[in-house]
Structure formats: C-alpha cells, structure tokens
Length: 436
Ligand SMILES: NC(=O)c1ccc[n+]([C@@H]2O[C@H](COP(=O)([O-])OP(=O)(O)OC[C@H]3O[C@@H](n4cnc5c(N)ncnc54)[C@H](O)[C@@H]3O)[C@@H](O)[C@H]2O)c1
Image (cartoon, rainbow, N blue to C red; front, side, top):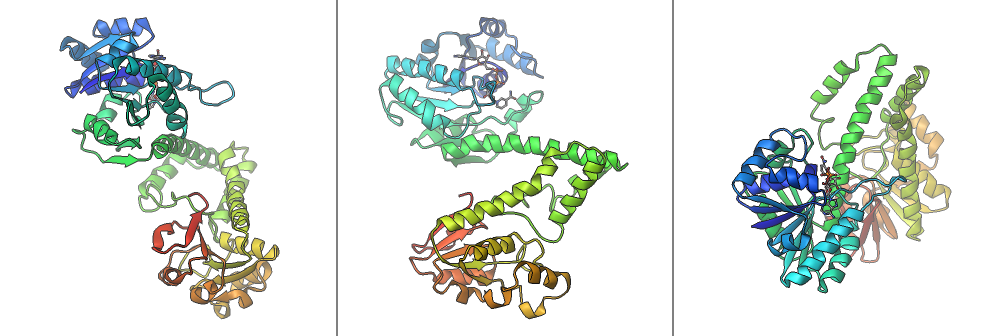
C-alpha cells in the first residue's frame, strides 16, 4: 500500500518506519524542515532506541521519502495517517488546531486528486473530534461525502516512548474505529502481520479507549504513590506492599472491579478507605486521589437516584439490596442507600434480594438495617412479585433468580440496569444504565 504519514514526531516517525518495514511505500510529511532533512539523511528526527538504524535502512531501500508538500503526498498515496500533535491549551482543553489544519490540507489535496482516499486519525483526540470536527472539514474541503470521496477512521496509537518500535510490533491490540464501508479492512491490512487482536469499534469508542488506557496508567501510578505516602508515614516499605498487591492477579491485576455500573460498598471498602485516609491525615501524607474516592462513590449513588427519578415512574422494583450478590451483608450497601433515598422521596419501592431474609438478619447487620431502613420487612418480597405492576425495575444484582424474573416483563415496563445485563431480553422493554 502507498501511505502518507502526516507529522513526523514520536508517533509519526515510528509509524512511518515500521510500516515501511512491512513492504509499504511511505511518504512522510512535516512542516518542520529540520526533521525532513534528518530523515532524508537517513537519520531519526527523535531519540528512540533502534529508530536511527531503521530509518537509515528504509531510506536507503527507497521505502521512505519525505516532503512538506501535502498535495504531492496525497497524490502518491492511497491512505493518509494523521500523527500531528494535540497539545493542551493553557486552560487544559485539547488543542486540535494541527489536526484541523492538516485535514483541511488533506481534503483539498483529495479534491485535486479526484479519487477516493482513506484518512486515518492516529493522533489522540477526544470522543466526537473525528466525526464532529474532522469529518466536516474533510467534506467541505473535498466537496464530497464521507464514504464516497474519502474514508475516515480512528486508529489510536499505544506505543510508549523508549520502547516504541517494540510496542508497534507487539501492541496489546489494534483498535480501528470507523463507520465507513471497507475502511476497517483497509486499515487492518496495515497491521495484518501483527499477531494481536484487531477490534472494529465505533469511532467514538476508538477515541475514548485511548483516554481510558492512558488515564488508567496515570491512576495506577498515583495509586501506588499515595499508598506509598501513607505507608512511609506508618513506617512500612511500600515497595514490598505493592509487590504483593501486584502478585494478586485474581482480584487486583485483573478485569475485576473495572466495569462501570454502580458504587462500591459493604462492610470493608468504605471502612478501610476511611481508616487509611485518616492515617494519611495523621501522617501529613498528600493523598488527594484516595481522599476523593468516598465523595466520588457518594456521587454515583446520587447520580443513580437522580436518573431513577428522571424516569418519572412512581412504582419501582429494586432487584438486589446487599452490597453484592450472594451475601446478606447490608452494611453500607449502595443499593440500600438508593432505596433509602427513593423511599424518603415518596416512591413506592418493592425490594427483592434472594440472599436477604429479614428473619435471619442479626448482630451488626440487623442493627444497621433497623437504623437505616426500618420498613425493610414490609418492602421485601421475591423478584417475581416485586416486578408485578412496577413501572421501573432497577437491576442491582445479576443472579439466576433475578434474571429469570426479568424474562417476563411487560412491554411498557422499563429497566434501569446497574450491572450490565442490558441485552438480557429480546422483547421491547426499554433498558438503560447509568453509563450506557
Ligand atoms: N508520544 C507518544 O508516546 C504518543 C503515544 C501515543 C499517542 N500519542 C499521540 O500522538 C499524537 C502525536 O504525538 P507526538 O508525540 O508524535 O507529537 P510530536 O509533537 O512529537 O510530533 C508532531 C509532529 O507533527 C508535526 N506537524 C504539526 N503540524 C503539521 C502539519 N500541518 N503538517 C504536517 N506535520 C505537522 C510537527 O512538526 C511534529 O513534528 C498526539 O496526539 C499524541 O497525544 C503520542
């Protein structure tokens, strides 16, 4: 394939040379003459392990050429990959000026060329940018429609500086977001020799995955440092602690607890978070992330309560009450807090939780429920009974009994799903969740 790569910085230089190595003919485009000159001389414009040698070999083999002439690059290629920078503005917002400018130029060049051309956004851009900003620019500049004059896709980059060639050859996966027919196949072909999964997703998902991944990395580092800050104050070596945290690949380094849906609760997480952050205050540890977590969790419960109320239904079935399925522990259950809020605001709530038998509650659990939800005995019923005549069913647990009850919903009943079972039903019941 003939490819043009716009922007020859960290991402563009690596992308160009790694694609050239895969038998593609690559034309690199940049506005920085110094970078172009270095590549012409067969040298890397950036410091990156192995890149000098790779670019040298590719230039020598005639597989990479460079230019500052956008029209020439588009004319002699079938597909353009946009790798220009997307820096922060002083207020923190994303500056897409370079992406916009380069796509304007690419669009004009496609119009001149008069043939279909694929455009791939590899720069990191916020969800909505590719279809909301880039697509209109390309349509105005080409004078044609997406899918007819040009193809458009979003293909985020996951390389890390310092190991970028290795990361290019061995990514976690390849993500291609596109709504244009044939574009997924065209872009996937670029990475055909890489033995990793290739996911065809929506453009918005492709844009968002890149942010979610980078932010997760940032959360992990911040988490390790904040645990370290408190440990230091308590005289504990955080390296040994985090080493063991990482060894638990069942609950810690795993997909567990990484599904959006609802708040955490129970007898341990909130209590332990309070105790640890209190210890942090006593030792003057700077732990803003840990300190913000309980508030964030309360906000989730409030957000669900607001969304439930926004449905405008009076009769509500709440399926699930304890902090997770399979236990009758009601202490600090977010579903209980939700029930409290709804009942307090006058909603007619029926509650079903097969694990919670009122007569069997005792000890701290019983005291907690008597204090927080004294009418529970009257409200508790079976899942099947709870949903009869309910206008809205809030699904808080995913258990066989609850799923079975959900099979018999009436078409005018609505479901608010907190656990991601949205596709449980083939009938016409309207379902939504907090984050989908
Ligand atoms: N650096 C990384 O490790 C990394 C990893 C993944 C994703 N990303 C994302 O990739 C994008 C590029 O990052 P980078 O670090 O390579 O940026 P960079 O600043 O190193 O390179 C951007 C290049 O684009 C060029 N450019 C600007 N306007 C241009 C135009 N109109 N025409 C042609 N070239 C133009 C610049 O001269 C520069 O050489 C960003 O959105 C970034 O967030 C970066």
